[in-house]
Length: 470
Ligand code: FAD
Image (cartoon, rainbow, N blue to C red; front, side, top):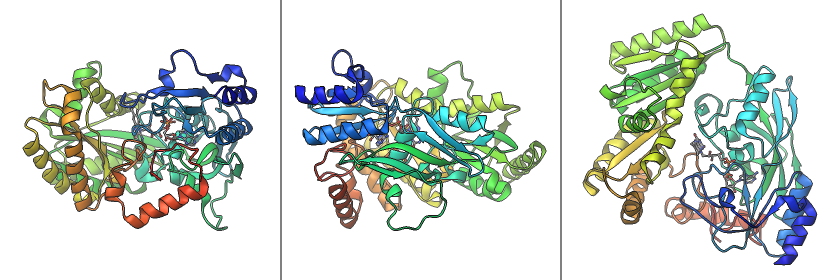
C-alpha cells in the first residue's frame, strides 16, 4: 500500500494526503449512521490533480469515494469500513471561474460551497436559485451529484435543471470538458445528465456551468396555518392560480415536526403551530414590485381564509422576519437529529394523492407501533415529503431502529409505490437504499443502470456499493 501513498503525495503534495490522526470529519456521515475507515483522504486542488489521483488509484486497484461537503443523507459520501478506500475531497477546488452576466451563467469549481455561489451571483445582481438548509456546507459538486432539490424547485427546478455544462473526470482519469453555457445543444447522448444524480459512481464532477436569473423585485414570505393536509394541497392550487410564476416556494410542516423545533431551539419562536395540525410556508418572488407582491398575497390570503384552506397567517414584514420564518423550517432536520435517530423517508408523490397517502400510512404505522411519532414536513409544491418515523416518547432510538426499521421501510415504500410515488425524491440512493432500490424500480431500469455503470466504470473504481450493485 505504500506505493499508493507515494503516488498520491507526488500528485497533490504530502500536506494534502491525510491518513493518520482523527479523520472523523471525512469518515462519518452527517446523520451519524455511517462510520467507515479511509485508507487516506486526498485533497486535490486542480482538475489535473483529480485526474491524476483517479489514474493512480485505478492503476493500483484502489476505489475512490468522492466527497463534497459531506452533508448527504443516504450514506454515499463516506468510505466503507474496509480501510481500503480513498476519500477524494473536492473542498480545495473552490474557485468561481466566471460569471457571464449577458449569458446568465456562472461557472464554478465543484468544491464551492453553495452559499458562496449564491453570494457570488447576488454580488453580480443575479440569482442562483438553488437553496437548501445545508447550503452553508454542501458543495455544488455534491448538489449536482445528488441532483439536489431544496426549497425553490417549484419555480426553478432541481439542480439538474440549473446546470448547463459539466467538467468531469472519468473513471479512467480522463477529463470530459463539457463546460458549455449553451441552452440548446442536441449533439447526441446527454452525457451531462448522466453524471448529474449519479452520486459519484460514474465520474467526478470538477466544475459546472449553472444558470442564473434576474433578482426578483420583491420577495415576500407568509406562514399560514392550515386545518389539514387536504387543505394545504387546496391552498397550493390557489397559490398557483393567484401568484402564477412568482410562487417560488411552498413548504408544509406537520405539528409534531414544529414542536421539535420549539423544544430544541427555544430561541426560535414558532408561530401558529399549537392550534394547527399543519403550517405552510409560502414564498412569493415578484418580478414587478413590492406593492404588486403585497397585493397578490393579500388576494391569496383573503381567498384562502374565505374558503377555509387557511385559518390564520403571519406575513413577514421585512427580510429579517422572512429569514426567521425560513430558519424555523430549516431547523426541522436539526431538531429531529437532536430528538434522536429516526427512520427517514424522502419520498415524492403526485400532489393530488399526498393527503390520501398520509391518511392511510399514518394509520397503518400507528397500528403497527403504538405511540409512534411522525415527523412530516417537506416541499409540498413538488410533491416531496420528508416522512420520518420517530420512536415513541421515552423509547430508545437505536433499539427502535433495530426492531422496526426494515418493517417500517417496507410499509412506507409499498404505500409510496401503490400511490404512484418514488422512494427517493431528492436525497438519492447512496449506500442506505442500494438494496431497497431493486424492489421498487423495474428490472429493465435496473439492468440499464448496471450497463451504464459497467460501460463507464468497468473496474468499479468510483464509489462502489452505492446506487447500483454489480
Ligand atoms: P456529499 O454529502 O459530500 O456527497 C453526496 C454524494 O455526492 C456522495 O455520493 C458523493 O460521493 C457524491 N459527490 C460529492 N461531490 C462530488 C463530486 N464533485 N463529483 C462526484 N460525486 C460527488 N438535499 C436536497 O436535495 N434538498 C434539501 O432540501 C436538503 N436539505 C438538507 C438539509 C440538511 C440539514 C442536510 C444535512 C442535508 C440536506 N440535503 C438536502 C442533503 C444534502 O445536503 C444534499 O444531498 C447535498 O446536495 C449534498 O452535497 P455535499 O457537497 O454535502 O455532498
